[in-house]
Length: 193
Image (tube, rainbow, N blue to C red; front, top):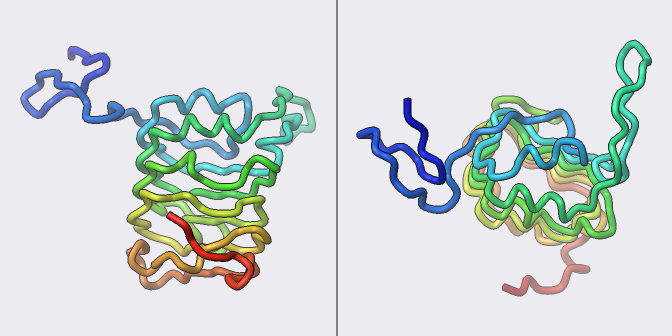
């Protein structure tokens, strides 16, 4: 089988130039951190889920179940999440619970179109955004959530989440949309495009 560097294989087996980034599937992780962030370079599909926590930015010491120590992960600036700019699909869930002064939106995921929801977080959510420093979402390409609820909770600075037509994005009517304790709409001003 012949490979097609910087190209994709057409149905007839010929190599043709990619329209945008070439398809590349990568494995999801329990938690994004400085030690694995570069493995997502050029990924267009994450097979699994993504989780961004406070320690994704602050760094942490890995401790195993037998109480032995693993690697120490250094601090990571949120701008390193720019590696996800090529991402179009996550088959599991997207879990965001990170807080950092420079982490104000999810525009790093600006090309993310689909969240599959094959695996779900608490509240049976496939999009779970809780207690973050986000001020806006910036998920401008998100058009489909196949399964699971949307839970956007306790984001004290987050505006405009309630203005999104989640029912048009979510394909499963059996799962809820939970939008609670985010910044009050009256304190957000007008949405400027």
